[in-house]
Image: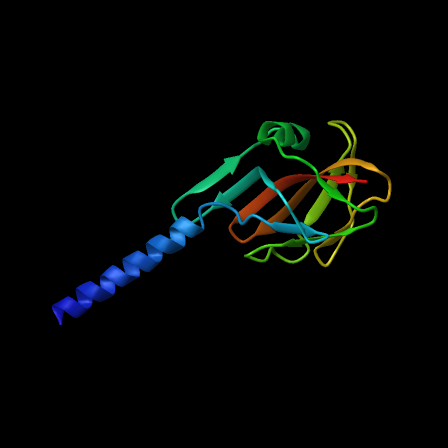
Length: 146
């Protein structure tokens, strides 16, 4: 009986440990457009678990792109960009913006996690943010419309 209790306790500790390890950071989106995967960098976030809560304030999206050396994914004008998360954000919290410079930011309309890129040629830096029960997070990526 004692061995069964010890085994059961070990399983509970193991499962609990895995749960906490996997939930220490916000989920990162998977972004695809025209059968291409877009590289995403972590932006500012506040995220917490049972034991720890952490807020990290990052530099601006254009500076994150430079710092991480993200290269723009080349796409067609008006292409549809799809965002998916392994953990679904809270309803109506997913938001996107286009950064033209550090001073010029514009909302980017989302419809069912799909964003239509501009028809005008150019390089566009996007920031995306969402909320979950454990916190909120922002992400940054860059595309080039050709």
